[in-house]
Length: 110
Image (cartoon, rainbow, N blue to C red; front, side, top):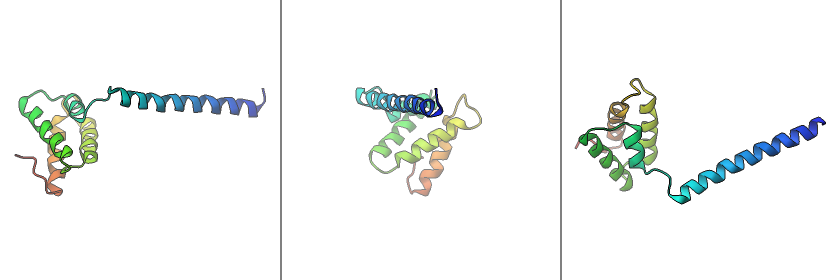
């Protein structure tokens, strides 16, 4: 085989792989198998106490009301999961999100 044919075949394989990956995400999104923000936060932060679940519900409600940007919540969620005690990232999420929300004028203490 010549180089051009090898390169063409490799490009075709990569393109098909990328296409199937993108369409699989679209199918999952349409089929409703995507977790809600609340479900993601509860499981990803390993919430276990009633007050933690209440805090997460409050955060989700503020996002739905447009008072707290979803992008901020998701980035804080990702950051918290990468910090120190990976067994229990809720603590990091709670503190960091309260600080970030305060800068936006949103009170999460109540």
